[in-house]
Length: 109
Image 1: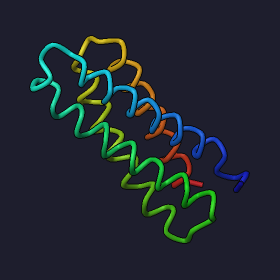
Image 2 (image 1 turned 135 degrees about the vertical axis):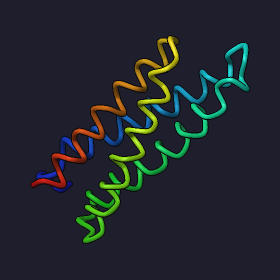
Image 3 (image 1 turned 90 degrees about the vertical axis):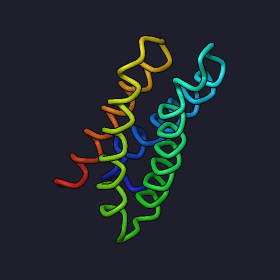
Protein backbone atom coordinates (compact mmCIF):
# COMPACT_ATOMS: atom_id res chain seq x y z
CA UNK A 1 0.00 0.00 0.00
CA UNK A 2 1.15 3.52 -0.76
CA UNK A 3 2.08 4.71 2.77
CA UNK A 4 1.92 8.35 1.71
CA UNK A 5 -1.80 8.10 1.04
CA UNK A 6 -2.71 5.63 3.79
CA UNK A 7 -5.06 7.95 5.74
CA UNK A 8 -6.81 9.04 2.53
CA UNK A 9 -7.26 5.43 1.40
CA UNK A 10 -8.67 4.56 4.81
CA UNK A 11 -11.04 7.55 4.73
CA UNK A 12 -12.23 6.59 1.23
CA UNK A 13 -12.91 2.99 2.26
CA UNK A 14 -14.67 4.09 5.46
CA UNK A 15 -16.78 6.56 3.49
CA UNK A 16 -17.73 3.92 0.91
CA UNK A 17 -18.88 1.59 3.70
CA UNK A 18 -20.85 4.38 5.41
CA UNK A 19 -22.52 5.31 2.10
CA UNK A 20 -23.47 1.67 1.44
CA UNK A 21 -24.94 1.34 4.93
CA UNK A 22 -26.80 4.64 4.57
CA UNK A 23 -28.28 3.68 1.19
CA UNK A 24 -29.45 0.33 2.55
CA UNK A 25 -30.96 1.97 5.65
CA UNK A 26 -32.65 4.69 3.55
CA UNK A 27 -34.35 1.96 1.52
CA UNK A 28 -35.95 0.77 4.78
CA UNK A 29 -37.33 4.22 5.64
CA UNK A 30 -41.09 4.88 5.63
CA UNK A 31 -40.91 7.46 2.83
CA UNK A 32 -38.32 6.01 0.45
CA UNK A 33 -39.25 8.50 -2.29
CA UNK A 34 -38.16 11.36 -0.01
CA UNK A 35 -34.76 9.62 0.35
CA UNK A 36 -34.20 9.11 -3.41
CA UNK A 37 -31.48 11.77 -3.83
CA UNK A 38 -29.73 10.60 -0.66
CA UNK A 39 -29.71 7.00 -1.90
CA UNK A 40 -28.49 7.98 -5.38
CA UNK A 41 -25.65 10.10 -3.99
CA UNK A 42 -24.73 7.36 -1.49
CA UNK A 43 -24.36 4.85 -4.33
CA UNK A 44 -22.32 7.24 -6.51
CA UNK A 45 -20.14 8.31 -3.62
CA UNK A 46 -19.43 4.75 -2.46
CA UNK A 47 -18.38 3.73 -5.95
CA UNK A 48 -16.13 6.74 -6.54
CA UNK A 49 -14.51 6.40 -3.11
CA UNK A 50 -13.61 2.77 -3.88
CA UNK A 51 -12.15 3.78 -7.26
CA UNK A 52 -10.11 6.55 -5.62
CA UNK A 53 -8.79 4.18 -2.93
CA UNK A 54 -7.83 1.57 -5.54
CA UNK A 55 -6.00 4.14 -7.66
CA UNK A 56 -4.03 5.40 -4.66
CA UNK A 57 -3.09 1.84 -3.69
CA UNK A 58 -1.81 1.24 -7.22
CA UNK A 59 -0.01 4.59 -7.31
CA UNK A 60 -1.94 5.56 -10.44
CA UNK A 61 -0.94 8.81 -12.10
CA UNK A 62 -4.67 9.62 -12.34
CA UNK A 63 -5.24 9.26 -8.57
CA UNK A 64 -5.20 13.01 -7.90
CA UNK A 65 -7.73 13.63 -10.68
CA UNK A 66 -10.11 11.04 -9.21
CA UNK A 67 -9.54 12.28 -5.65
CA UNK A 68 -10.48 15.80 -6.73
CA UNK A 69 -13.80 14.48 -8.08
CA UNK A 70 -14.18 12.31 -4.97
CA UNK A 71 -13.86 15.31 -2.66
CA UNK A 72 -16.53 17.20 -4.64
CA UNK A 73 -18.92 14.24 -4.62
CA UNK A 74 -18.32 13.65 -0.90
CA UNK A 75 -19.28 17.30 -0.30
CA UNK A 76 -22.55 16.79 -2.22
CA UNK A 77 -23.33 13.57 -0.37
CA UNK A 78 -22.50 15.09 3.03
CA UNK A 79 -24.76 18.04 2.33
CA UNK A 80 -27.68 15.81 1.33
CA UNK A 81 -27.25 13.30 4.16
CA UNK A 82 -26.85 16.15 6.62
CA UNK A 83 -30.42 17.28 5.85
CA UNK A 84 -31.83 14.06 7.33
CA UNK A 85 -31.99 13.41 11.07
CA UNK A 86 -31.63 9.62 10.93
CA UNK A 87 -28.47 8.37 12.60
CA UNK A 88 -27.29 6.52 9.47
CA UNK A 89 -27.52 9.74 7.45
CA UNK A 90 -25.67 11.76 10.10
CA UNK A 91 -22.90 9.12 10.32
CA UNK A 92 -22.63 9.03 6.55
CA UNK A 93 -22.40 12.83 6.35
CA UNK A 94 -19.55 12.77 8.88
CA UNK A 95 -17.69 10.05 6.94
CA UNK A 96 -18.15 12.03 3.71
CA UNK A 97 -16.80 15.23 5.29
CA UNK A 98 -13.75 13.37 6.62
CA UNK A 99 -13.12 11.77 3.23
CA UNK A 100 -13.40 15.10 1.39
CA UNK A 101 -10.93 16.60 3.86
CA UNK A 102 -8.46 13.72 3.41
CA UNK A 103 -8.77 13.85 -0.39
CA UNK A 104 -8.00 17.59 -0.34
CA UNK A 105 -5.04 16.99 1.98
CA UNK A 106 -3.75 14.38 -0.45
CA UNK A 107 -4.17 16.79 -3.37
CA UNK A 108 -2.18 19.46 -1.53
CA UNK A 109 0.70 17.07 -0.72
